[in-house]
Image (tube, rainbow, N blue to C red; front, side):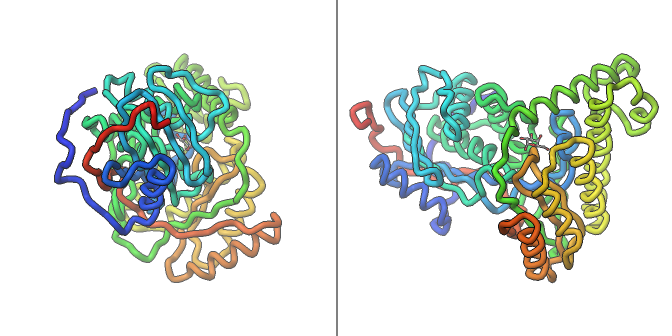
Length: 419
Ligand code: GLA
């Protein structure tokens, strides 16, 4: 990993006063920690949607995400000691930890992502100082659109700048994934962090999660909308169920490797090979593997259809993906089913599937832009009739990945006595 020392005030830094949520982060830094804006670095990182390629990333396969125009913002000011104070505008609460004592407080929830990133930066040899951090977001929290990776990336970008260091975006994404795997204990793949780091305005990304090669597919066609449909259901057991799915996939890959030399991960098994050899897998593991092998193919086919602007074909694949996530991978739930089924019957819908780990959270629909209001009204009404409460439905644009928005002149760092 290369560390480039870089001067503070680089010309690449863009000032943007119109960023309302960024303002909230800066104001919280001032109100909670008495750190004025002129001392602050402000960084932003977006959430993501994933059109196809659900649970393929940790099988070294392909994913087809876009970064969305909803982000986490981190305002940061350096301290002269090893203390980190962090405040969340959303949770209206804060946490304090020390960089020289990198143990996780088991009761920490959102702040564990922040601490994990800081611990990983230090472990990578980056001289991150103690700091005061304030977080604000317009990406819905815990709703399956990757608010945690956005928090990790925004924290990493802000703290790298405080350290006057720079890493290639690929290394920042990998470092954040490592923080989540090792510090938080969620064995996630690279999808969320990579999409948040590499998002491109008006582009979908095709990412090869083995080589990390990333193709940017332009979205010339403005007649299609990416719509998030949030179940408003708390996700439960995501971590344990997720890690269990991952272990089942690893077991399937090991069993296939015994009959198919060269198989390292399920990504190496083609649909034909799967059909020929599937009898060697125990039933549950076979179901999990069947989802992954075909879903990987769907991500590749979906990229082809995105290039051609064939949204009906992408939508058809999304419907197949949703059925597979429900029946074979078993990560859907009643609420996600109600939302996706309502979407299929709604005006202007090409297709829909759950995004993220599943078990609640959100689904993503591809919708004809002209039919958006009728689509949203229809889905909300149907969902409420079946489930008893309204979902949240909003359209997203494909947005730029993580960035430092502004940085103040580094003033006198705070010291221990300010605690
Ligand atoms: C979560 C994980 C990702 C990915 C998705 C499922 O969002 O963080 O790495 O595995 O679930 O596609």
